[in-house]
Image (cartoon, rainbow, N blue to C red; front, top):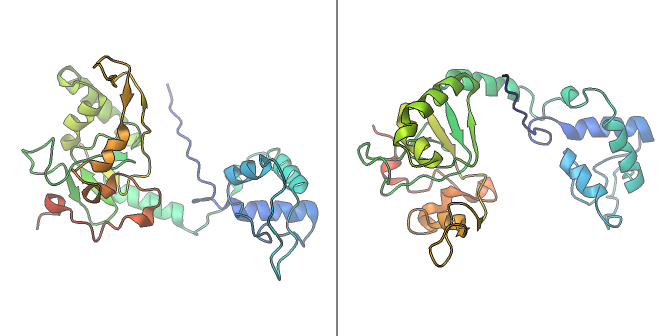
Length: 262
């Protein structure tokens, strides 16, 4: 069985903005400009869908010394046409030229098996791997932390070349584990696992099969927001998740035992 993983890259790596602008001018003339409105810029498929779903026309006004903004009717026509273009998404260029090649080179140079997208690991003190003296360790990139005890199993990426290795470790450790989180905690010292900080994905408080109600019975709420105090206080746990990457500076945070050994 083959596995295909799709990543939504328009507006981040792929230059959706330039492609839409090009198609808009082809349809409506050289004077139209997607940036001519004071409304939020349209840089991805989600931006288009959000604008079209608006119950009434936007209050945005044309900006001085800019081209003509699209009407909502023209935007709908543009989006209908774009969706008819065969392999439109494959035709998108890079926002930053050479970015994909750099990503590929970094992936080839730095060995990695798993990358966790949430920052659920302990520091000061370590919780899971006291024998190692740490559950995490800084790397030469301030936002990628080597992890030995991360339990962000709700959002992670496995290197395609490491799938067989990860599954083999699953099989070896499964009889000794108490769940998927614990399984990953046990196997991380045997892998090259990393976490991006601050975590860019989090779980919301909700009823779950691991939650308990006020009487201690299964089926209650799981309070994932408690991870905001993963290390006792909010200030000491700020890397676990932030809405904006710039709201957490890993270079000024006190990483305690997670600092690299010299």
